[in-house]
Image (cartoon, rainbow, N blue to C red; front, side, top):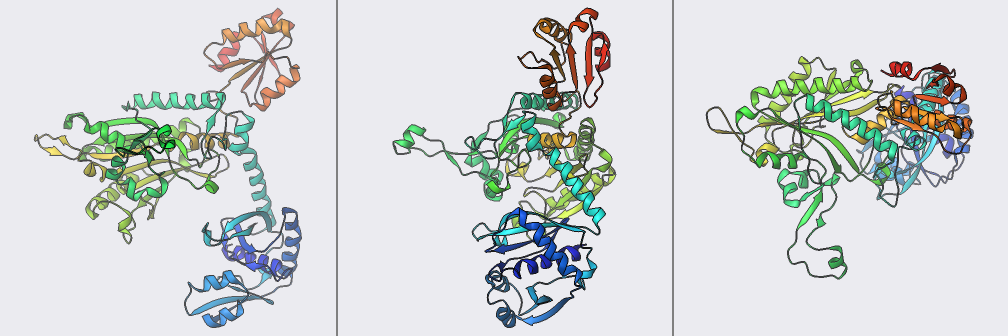
Length: 578
C-alpha cells in the first residue's frame, strides 16, 4: 500500500503539471491512509479535485510504467532547471540521485514505486482536501498548496474509510462542544486558551470530583502551587535550558504595567516564567520539611494549570492548547518501594480508563527511551538512565502491558511509559504518562534520613492519569459523540411543563429529584421546540408533565435515543436511575 500511495502522489503531480507547465513541484510522499503533493503557483478550489481525479484515473488505465533511473547530480540539475524546489532538494543529496519517469513526466524521487499504473484500482482512491504547507515544513519558507488524497486496496476499503471519516466529523469535539454549549475559544482572549461555559465547567467539576475522591482513596494528598515561578527555579530544574522551545519568555516582575508605560528604570530585575510543569513546585514543598524513611511513600497530587508554547497553526480545540490542567502527581519513595509504586500507578491508570468506559484490553503502551547517540539532549549519567529504563521495562513486563519501546522519545530528565487508549472509532489517543525521574532529586538536593541515620536521596515518579483535563474531555466528547453516560452528563434530566399552569408541578418534580442534575425548561417556547432542544442537548432523560400527569401524580419520561414515552410514578423513575 505504501508503494501504491507513493505512486499515486506522482500520478497526481503528472495530472497537475500536464495541465499547466508553470506550476512548480514540491514533494509528494505516502502518508498514513494516503498521500499528498505540494505545488507552487497553483490556483485551485475544492470543486476542481474531481476533475483532477478523472485525469489520474485516465493515466492509471493507460498502464504507464514507472521507470527508475540513476543520474548524476549535474544531470539532475539540467532536468529540473525550471523546478526551484527540486534544485533546493538536490543540495542535500549525494552525487548520484534517482529519478522516476512516468510517461513524459519525470520526478526526483528515491522510490519505491509500483511497476506500472495498472496495479492500482482506479476506484480505490479519492482526493480529499486542499491545504497550505511550508516547503520543508519551515515557516521561513514559502507557503505551497498541498493536495491530500486517501488510497486503499479497493473501493470497499475506501468506502469504509470515508464512512469512518463522516462518523468522525459527527463526533468532532470542536463542533459538539459548541452545539452542547460546553466551551469555546475566543481570539481576543487568546488562541489555545479554553473558556468553559456553565455546562462545560460542570462536566469538568464532575470529572475532577471523581478524580479527587479516587486519589484520596488511593493514599494521595492534595497540594496546590502557583501559575508562575522565578526564573532561578526553572534554571535549576533544567527546564530553562532543555525545555525552552515549549516555554514562554520571562515576565519582568520588578515593576507595574504603569511603571513600564512610564519607562521608569528597573531598580532590581526579577523575572518569572509561566510554569510548563508542576514538578519543581512539588519538590520545593518536599524540601521545606525534613523527611524520614518512615514517611515514604509520599504521594502528592495536584490539578495544576500549566502553559506551553504551541505554534498557532498546530492548535486544535481541546486536544492541542496553550493553557491546560494536568492531573499531576509526584510520588517520592525509597529504592525498595519503586517497583511497587510503579505497579500501583499502572493499576490506577487502568482503573480510571475502565471507569470512564474504555476497553483496557486495547490499551497500547510505549516505553520512551533515551537516544544514546544524542546524549546532549538529556540530563543525568548513564548509570541513572540504565537503572530507570530497566526498572520501567521490568514493571511493564510484570504487569503484562502491551508495550513497545521507542528510542529518542524520553523526557529530558528520564524515561517514561506513555499510555494510549482507543475510542469508539478505534482511534488511538495519548493519555496517561508514567515517568521515572532520577535527575530532579539530585538537582534540588532532595534527601531523607534513612534507617542508619544517614542522608539518602529519594526516588521520584511523575504521573498523570488523564494527561490533561482538556484533552481527556475532548476524548470523552468524541468517544461518546456527546452522549455522555448518565453519571457524567452535565444535565441528567430535563423537565418540560406543557404550559404555564403545569410549571409548579414541574418544579415539584425537580425538588423530588434532588441530588440529580435537573433543569426545568419553563421558557416561553412551544413544547416541540423544548423537546427538540433537549434532544439536541443529548440529555439522558426528558420528562414532560401536563394535566394527565398532575391528575395521576406521575411523569411521562423518554430515554435518550428512544421515541416512546413511558408514564410512571416519580418513585419508580428514581428506582430506574439508581
